[in-house]
Amino acid sequence: MITGLEEAAASIRRARQDKGLTQGELGSRVGLPQSHISKIENGTVDIQISSLIELARALDLEVKLVPREALPAIEGSVKAANANRTTADVSRAISKLQRQVTLADRIQTDFPALQGIEDYRLALKNIQALPIESQSLKALDEALRPSRKLAKILETHDDVAKLKKQLSTATDALQKWRNTQVHRPRLQQPAQRPAYRLEDNE
View (tube, rainbow, N blue to C red):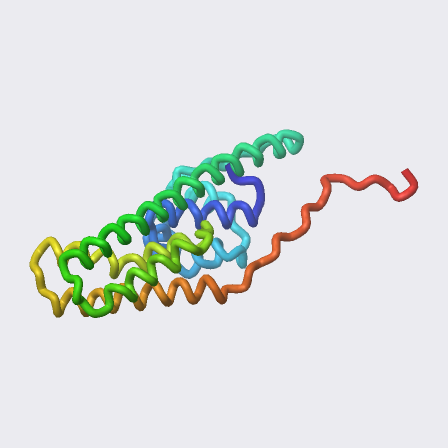
């Protein structure tokens, strides 16, 4: 459900990312250049209604005009759905981290003298100690990509040199993600404004 220009831009960006589409790929589907999709998602250009409808169709969204008094109930439903999805995404991220911890245990068991395994285990432990926020999930998944290659190396052959090199790459990626999270400024949530305000003398 789309309820305004900012909400439309956020919904389009979120739906595109959920579908795993690049801005260029989405643009190709609706006949718009990537640069225009970027402007739409950033809210720097007004969306023509025809383009909005095409984008919505391409992303399995709906454009609806609803009575203003129905907006609180609709927005509440949308927020609840988004909260459920975010909770599921965070749970999946935690599961991915736990799988890497299990893999690290396996590596240490099979190669107890392997240099770098302790640093890798510590990097995982430090990340597990941090709160995982929804806006950092995509970056965390990217940071875990080198870690997922460790399992493939173990499955294919026991190349200790290659394993050591990949372990170092995986550790660096995790440490970089953690440092970014620790030093990232926390945005304060804007104060909620009431829908109406009583006069001072009432």
